[in-house]
Length: 395
Ligand SMILES: [Zn+2]
Image 1: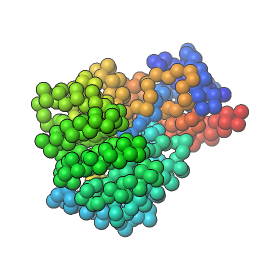
Image 2: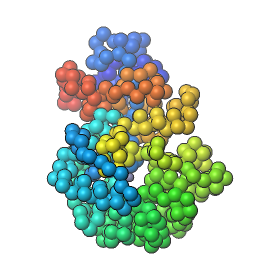
Image 3: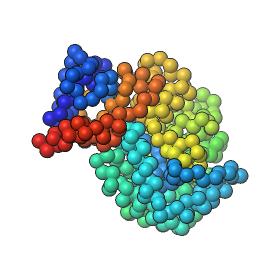
């Protein structure tokens, strides 16, 4: 048993007892500054975060600058990314490992990773990501989407996607069935058929705007209903939902909620985005993904921190009051904001007075604990803390 004294949890200063990989007890205490505490005073306990959309296989190095230019079209962007990544293939694991470490340091304990597959690279990216997942076991849980970035039909990737699913990818992806593959029904028929045949989920990148976007969403709703895949289908981005009138939006939202299609948004500042408040009212499940965790071929402005992304969501929606600031956490946490005895000892500690304060100030995470073990944060390197946890682990 190990006791973390004077932690702000469930709205009170408490001692948190950890037994193996579980929270044993949470005992209110009178003192914020316990004299024998392992930790500095004033740390708030928050659950770990879940990143619903990330591309770990395509991060560029952070220690050197690669010149950038703006492509003329989406297809040129695809080619540009290929040209950038090809010569640095050998460093993929190392770059992904560095990205994952930064995610973990920001309190991310779970992530859905879209992994590129196509006839040129085959399933090589997935093989590397599976190695990374094994390395990170007990720290970050990774699930993989077989993602034909160059277009499922456009790049002739159906066989490779199938191979990736056989290798263990648990989600099938695609990108813009209309705008990229130029055949909404053709692309979606393959995706849904594969999902049914292999018992996997679906997560489609949809950037198409206007009627092309709505037609895709409408067809996905039809197929989700027909194949009984409610709760197993996600649309990432869905910018077009931010471009329609409120009546149509509520109608579409009600349909998404009814058939069980979820949405993921990265809270873009440079495009329309699904109106999260309205869609939540309609019952649509929405999660945040960082999408870009650092510098990549698409943007130099990536950021792995979901707390900062949640802050942006709150700011864009003018969620300025306590209730709304707290509400924002539902879109990116891996568990509830309150902790109970018996819960897994998965949490992060950061200097803040309450969750609302943390969302407003986005302080750096001091300690990330996963399965009752410190796995990241500045305090994880403290010899006294390491020793206490090591003793605890052997008891
Ligand atoms: Zn993406």
